[in-house]
Image (spheres, rainbow, N blue to C red):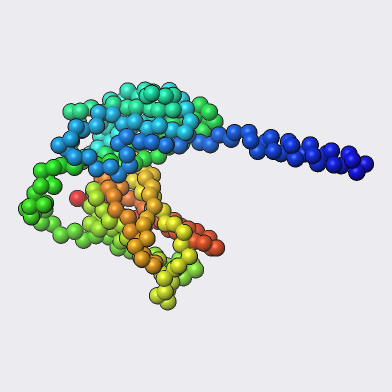
Length: 257
């Protein structure tokens, strides 16, 4: 009987080891982008003529899409989605007559041939006007409007204060800062990561996500053109804490020109 038990557990061990090496497919996730997220391209350079995304799995092209939207919420791609060098790469061409300096949002959605799941996401890239950059470097003021910015505090149930600021709170490049403190004024030290996720449901933009950078204890910052158009944006803030539950709070940020 003892011998049978030894054989039985040996078989279970071998089967378990075999199962552990069976490949498990995840959802189709992007591995490379062109242009890349938050990339700033100079208008003096050649404007991109296509957007290319490569995924971890093979997209079903008939049930997938890449849409490129300008700051007026109009499509600038040619709606000609096709495969690239591999069956994991999707390409959509851009209409050169519509690609001008500005911020562009790339919305993608794919159905994986490998696991049958649908995934989607968004990111932004910018084409910068060289003339505007030259005027700025020469001290020529092109906009006399003083930005007011956005600021709001939220106190959570466990006495953590989130002090969120957006400057200048206008379409385009913004700086996002977040202070994370207890109500007694001390810094929250056990933070692993802080994620921001930007969504404009009215214009079907996002979610666009990124990770904040720690500037010093209890203070985090992020800069980018995530708020690409005017309107009501929802910024979901996730604070991952070591040894405690995550903090999830939403900030409603109005963006006006």
